[in-house]
Image 1 (cartoon, rainbow, N blue to C red):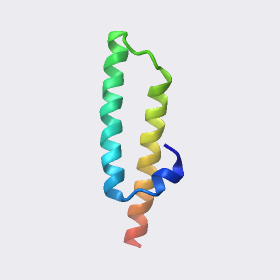
Image 2 (image 1 turned 135 degrees about the vertical axis):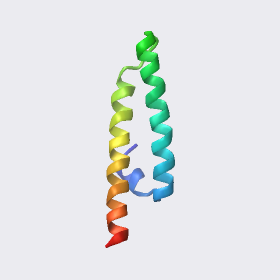
Image 3 (image 1 turned 90 degrees about the horizontal axis):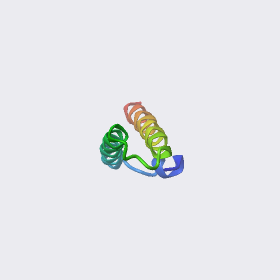
Length: 66
């Protein structure tokens, strides 16, 4: 996901997307442990998407309090 796409989402949508990405990250870890992981770059991409979503969610939370 790109930053512009993430910023367009609401807090609820961000939380849903975060949960989806965490599940995918969990599955990728299992694939890596069993030697079935084919797209190794996907792990890095998921990790960065999670960080991006957490950052934007935090910014939106701070804005709503101010």
